[in-house]
Length: 114
Length: 112
Image (tube, rainbow over all chains, first blue to last red; front, side, top):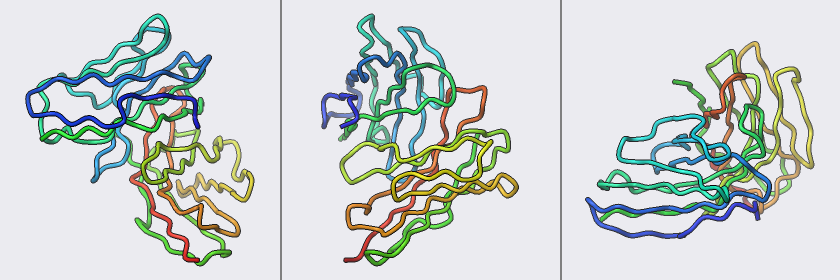
């Protein structure tokens, strides 16, 4: 168990809808990362938050947004969902924000858009 | 963007044999690398890391080798066990950035 908790484990929704994925980092970790993993691609970095502030952005669509709350949990919001958004979404956390920090991953949320 | 690729998408080994999983990276500025293991239905699990000032690092039954000249990374698993069956990813980090770039993964199957 990595100590990173993601909910829900599975999510099934329809195109055009909006969903929220939740992540609680490991105790003491200030940095949270979101990744998307689809069948034909590896892990794609979406966005990073550190202590409540956005720190780095990757291949995140404008329809997607995230935030990190004062208690350090994070939410990833996906809106106007399309079939192609079906994927595994992982959250990871690390102690600090910078490079050379091991990221510990949660078990993921499997999103199915029908 | 960065390019981190794996030479083989699948690898099958006999239980007890040693496994070698390879990874090529394209950014010569990358100076930190991590190997992750992902079992079916789970998130990636940290195995071992290495910084670019080293060319070899050993863990429990695993060894990572880094060849900066040819931008190649390998993960060696000794005495492979059925529990080692998983997808293995290498990830690279370029020193000033927070972002890790992951390869597409190699699926390791251990034959009992």
